[in-house]
Length: 440
Image (cartoon, rainbow, N blue to C red; front, side, top):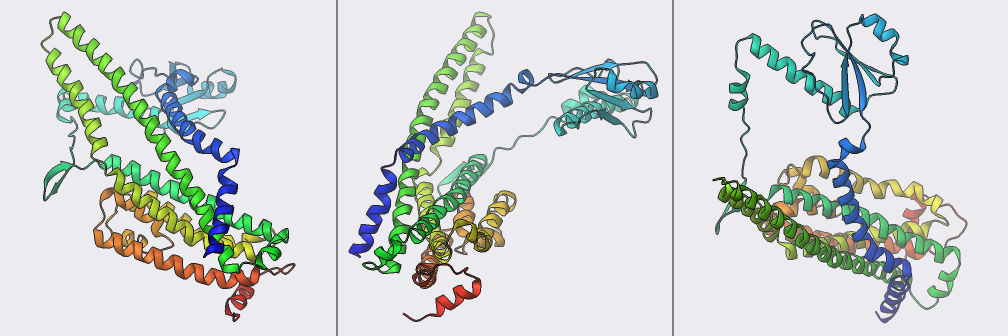
């Protein structure tokens, strides 16, 4: 045990003391939040940053002239010329698009020299559909204003009924937490697992391993390397959480201050104007901020962080043992490709199905089984946890994760002890099976 601890210390401090570790640990949360803020700003201002496209319109139906309005990204110009002539001269017309609307509306076409973007097609389709629908309703003698009022959407306030009473379901918050947690675990298993594999390959190729093995058993070396690098990842995640919480708290304070100033100005204007809606506006503003704060306070942060750290560590230990085994069986990273597919396929499969199925069906049989199987549970269970997981399912999953790690480490260790001293021979699955069966 003492030798394993020494290896853990070496692997941990040799990485934590690097400037790159400190730089990435404190810069990543700042860069991530900055990136999210920039994305939000660009999405909100997309009409200002995007180039306005000119659309030449040939409307044989006559329904859309003076009704198809310009948008922030599209400028429509109706032409009275023959469609064939307009189409023939389009490439030299200076327009970006040619929209042809036949008399029956069937076969409406959009021409462009370059491929039109999907959002442009959708926006034009939506505008034409709205105008055509309104015209058909008017033709049928139906008042569109009354119809629009009748079609006012119904909003749902999702609640949970528990033994202690009702509470907000916070479905969208659960969505965000589940997706973010699964993404972080998915990335970390590849990132830190690959570090273990590279470390093993480097020591093997440099023949340093021959000196180390003279005083340490191969299994002790593998365990020390896995745990040491795992602690590096854990340290980095804990620091990321601390920095992110601090940045979020600061951003939240600034947003609340800005919101209070905006609310004060709004209410002041309404009061000065003698509006009876001033009290209503103040109540609405308080209600909006109250909902935001309530949603943040209702999140079981400690519980989610504990589960995240457990599944990160157990998932990392399980997969890193396999990565270490692969690293011991090859002489360079190029040779690892033949072994990587079986390792990464369960992770990729679970991540894809989590984004499309588990997130929408967290209590289905498939979701439950995927959250129990050790090779898929780190991602699948973290998707389910924000939606509420029965205690027995969580306990069974954790026990199976620990058992899976022990079994995987034992199997990987049997291959590692032989492969770490093999040179110049290209390993195959058959060779790995032979190494596994060798007696001590």
